Length: 292
Image (cartoon, rainbow, N blue to C red; front, side):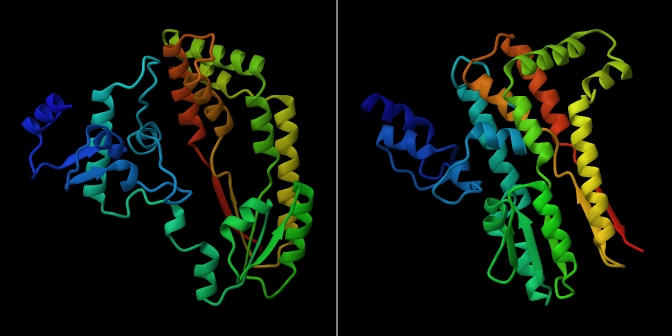
């Protein structure tokens, strides 16, 4: 241990600022206390609160748009150090609120309440608990059909100014598809084939987005529910339809496969497919219109 201390003190002075991720583990192992530390595990608070810490690879993917720790041969200390330094610089450049999770900000229903507006949240019970406060009307539902009927009922209440609801059939379909190993393997192989061929064309890009009959039925059903909801709204009501994001279920499934080394496809090709899937999942759509 004495030799390590000597090497450490050759490059780290009292005025040196140490930058890293979860540095307390390294400092405890070295039995060293240092006064100037920037720890990105603390700098970027976890969405679930102070008792949790985000992994460096998660922060790198989200804020640096870069995948790290995917080689399968353990951590690359240079790669990790570079990511931690760039994350620290982003905070310095953009201010302390940069990258702060939503829980540190006021809830939408609380802001609307301050402006004298009443709200109703119609959704899965976990979503309702997370985003509601004591001022809004919380309506937990267990199916899309129930969500539609309860939302229409809320829309008829003249005292309600804002209503949130969500149809979950599409996300449920994505989750089911992501767990089907055979379909997932075929989908990944198709993506890799199109990514690695020369002269990728528009027609090849379109092949990646082929809609199955089952998915078409789900989308048609969602479209029908939105149509019924729009018809039930009062005149001058603003309807906002947002997809939020794409198929994140398959992205999470492929990441898990990489982390657990459970893929029959080469790691390099799987990472390429993951990047393609992630880019597609990050695309969202939003439509807004006033009923006349």
